[in-house]
View 1: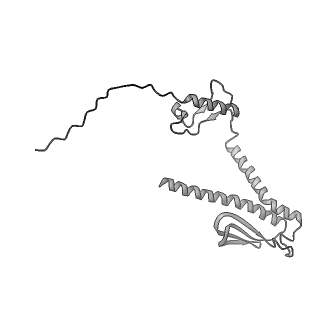
View 2: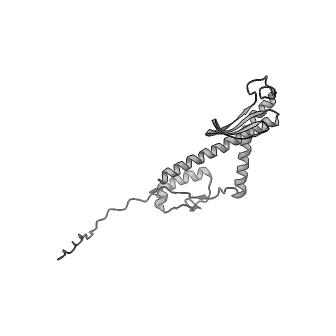
View 3: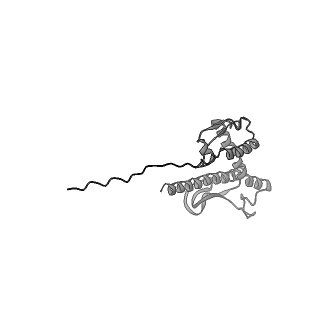
Length: 200
């Protein structure tokens, strides 16, 4: 039950995250189109068929659609250069700006998110290595490593360059595996349980 619920939650989180990223991408196209005086007929979250029209702003219908994987912008006269105020009638530089609006918006969102992470968390400290998790019955688990442990040395050395660390950790993992215990013999007394008393 818990695994099914987690799977459903993961799917919902994926759809929401994809919708936000796609929506911001398409908003970049929309913003550049409006700045270039190109009319936009529809800004849609999700793909048609249409579920509901949310509102209309400056001639643009903002809609919510049934298929949740993405978003779209429908500029006026996209493929018809004879439509005044449309994308096809705009000069090449404006069309290029509209096409680049989405990727540039994704780039700006990425820079903003990384800036927020570094502001709240700080720069990662590459001089230390922290154990996040260990697999059951792995050499690390058998050696007693648990989540939250910080590795400060490997073979008495403190350097943590990536190549050094990976090679040393691979060698250390092989040495962490404990040798099999020597065979032993023992006599263990085992007695059968006493039968319950017979009622008289």
